[in-house]
Length: 268
Image (cartoon, rainbow, N blue to C red):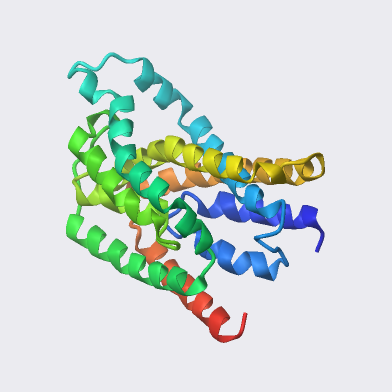
């Protein structure tokens, strides 16, 4: 398979999975070897973070009007109710944990066994949290409280575990602290912008030697494909979560975890 096709397929996988509660890492663990991609060989280490940022740009574009409205607003409840303050509070726990464990987690990112375990465990958490939460009254993103933002940020720390899914833990964290599912998802996506941009920029800097004239085409393909696919996925998911449950994603996580285990036992 050509590198161009590999880049295209990986961009599609990233765009499909980054913002759904199903773990992009779990998919990459299986997809990269099947595609013949050596994750340790240039330019693939930096490529993975380029396509992640492509997906983030899609979120920024999808929510651009809402984000701009909140950024320029003067909250009646004071500065502490401004979106930037809430995101800053939510980012702090994850930034501390992420910077502390960054090298360790990157070294173990592709270990399939913990990924499979995290996929299955996360499915159980999703079903339990959604069942206990029940129906929630309507709410706006502006109504997210500072303490709720902090809880979502604490939940995001779990995302350092490969296979946990940043989207899953932050959405479940939001639901567990009283947010309706749709608002929890929207706040999760807002939080992803500074979190993943920061993490991606850090790792791109670490692998900057892989960014060459020869690799520019692959990086561009992956970025663009990831952006387009993620834009469609975020739009569809936000409509879906308004009225429908998340348990189908839990079932999918179990099936994916089983596939990862089968891949391990089959000798990869």
